[in-house]
Each structure stands twice: as structure tokens, then as C-alpha cells.
Amino acid sequence: MEAAALKYDFRSDTVTRPSAGMRAAMASAEVGDDVFGDDPTIKRLEARVAEVIGKEAGIYVPSGTQSNLIALTNHCERGDEYIVGQQAHCYRWEAGGAAVLGSIQPQPLENAPDGTIPLASIEAAIKPDDPHFARTRLFALENTIGGKILPADYVQAATALAKQHALACHLDGARLFNAAVALGVPAAQLAQPFDTVSICLSKGLGAPVGSVLVGSKEAIARARRLRKMLGGGMRQAGILAAAGLYALEHNIERLAQDHANARTLAQGLAKLPGLTVGMPDTNIVFVDIDPSVGPAFAAHLAEHRIGVVSMYGSTRQRWVTHLDVDAKAIDEALSLAAQFLSR
Ligand SMILES: Cc1ncc(COP(=O)(O)O)c(C=O)c1O
Image (cartoon, rainbow, N blue to C red):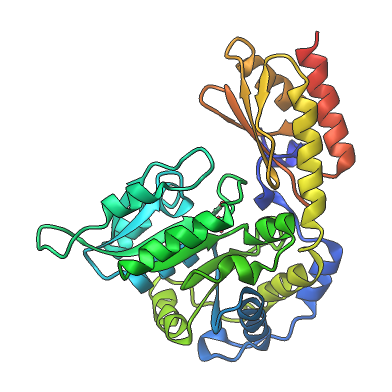
């Protein structure tokens, strides 16, 4: 179904459209050629994200995928290896870029249901210095992962283990602000154990484009060359960065509404026959559906212009709340679901 035909789009928090206020900020942005280092709006955005996340420097990039790839190639040379979860975006969902473009070998490990990677598996996967093996150089986590918040004590223990073995640590924090708002802690606290952190502005924060990779001054200086190599050096992109600055100012605290909406949605769906619903930590709800009704339920939602992601022959759905689906959207979606499943 065409996205434009959807009434309520729960497929992802990437579907948000820039608000009038955000568009006004973009229209009036001061710009310059960023490859020459001349764009004041991009510089402000990079400095602001670095400050909020508690790192020395930041670099604005077109996408979360590019941000992660720059981080991986920053930490690993050709033939090195990174330890990563099977479910991690920077392993599973980025078209194998680390291997293809970075010549970096992934060492994927099974994620536990809570999104963590067991410490014993990490330890067992770190290779000794032996010419048979790729050099294990990096440990990568994602927070939130599938909408779940990684337990803080786990993150401390896992990154401490990685550091004991001289591994660098990267966080895909595409939705780190969702975790920070849900926990009521500064994002910098969650970012502290990591050398580099990738933050997406185009997910729950509602900007149309862009991510910022933050880390040490040296790492970000290297990242500038890598960004250029990957074609991510943009020119008067302050017009886009202005949306990011607007998002940081206006759209962080309101993530709490998305989380409340996700809880209402999950609680409502959980009451319906044939559905098994995971209670969300943040803004992503997974629903398992009896195979006897899955495809017909998915078709019913599509017919009524409710967009969700259906997986595994429609026996699993992902519903994501965001800026453009309010409490009314949740109510209507729940009534439509009940109309089909309770008959
Ligand atoms: C956790 C996570 N990391 C990275 C990305 C990649 O972001 P982009 O789509 O901007 O490349 C996504 C995209 O959905 C994501 O969910």
C-alpha cells in the first residue's frame, strides 16, 4: 500500500514529516559550504549533540547507516573484527556495509531476549593475538534495541569487559533519547561508557534527515575523511541541520508521550483474542499473532489505512509510536483491531 494512502502510519518512527515550526527553522537557516567547514548551522548542531551526549566532538552525516559505518571503520582496520549482536542494526540491517566497504569482519553473537549479549559469549568470542584470527578490535551495542532499554549495569559490565581486552566500544544510539527520557536520566550518562555514539535525528526526534556521530576530537577528525570517502560530505546542508537543532530543542521531552501512547496501544492490543503483546519500554510494540488470523488481520488493518510492519507471514507485527500518531490514532487503531478480532 502507498504510504500516502495511510491514515495512521505505525510502521516506524522514521515516517514523521517535518512540522511547520521545523520547516520554518529550515527555511531561515544560515548556511555555507560544509565541506569547506563554512556551514554555521551544521557546526552548531555538531557542537550541541557532542555537548548533550558528553563527548568532545561531533560530525553531521546523512544517515544512521553511514554514521555506524564511519564509526566501525574508525575503530577497525581492514581485516579487523567487531563483536556485535545478531539483531543489531549495524550488523543485520545495513546491507553488510562493514564487510563490503570496510573489509571488517563481523563476529555476530546471539542477543538475549532483553537485547543484551551475554558476557560469557563476548569473552569467548574475543580472539587471542594469533595469526590465524582476525584482530578483535571493537564491541558494538545498540540502545534502545528493538525498543528495549539495555540495563545500565549490563552496559557497564559489558563495556568494562571489552576495555579489559583493549576493545573500543561503539553505541548505535539511534534512539538513545528514547531510553534517556524513559529512564529520566541524561543521555550523556547512557553514552558515557562508549568511545563513539551515533545519534539519529530522523527517528523519534522527527527531523527529515540526518545523524550525528560523536566521540573524541581525534576520532571525529578521522571521521571527516571517512565521511568524504563515503560521499557524505554535503554542502549547504545547514538547511537540514536546522531541523536537527529544532528537534533537539522541541522534540526530546515529548518522547514521553510516544512511550505513553505505546503503552496504551500495547495494553489495548493485549486484551484482544489471538494476540500476544510485549509491553514496551519505549515506543516500539511487538505483537505475535495466531497464524490462523495473522494474514487476515494484517489485511484488515491495511484496508482501513493503518500502517504496521508485518513479519514472518504476518504472525508478528511491529507498531511504532511517534510524533505523527497521537492518542486519537491509538484509539482508532484499537477499535479497528477489536472490530476484527472480537467478532
Ligand atoms: C537502531 C538503528 N540504527 C541505525 C539505523 C539507520 O538509520 P538510517 O535509516 O538513517 O540509515 C536505524 C534505522 O532505522 C536503526 O533503527
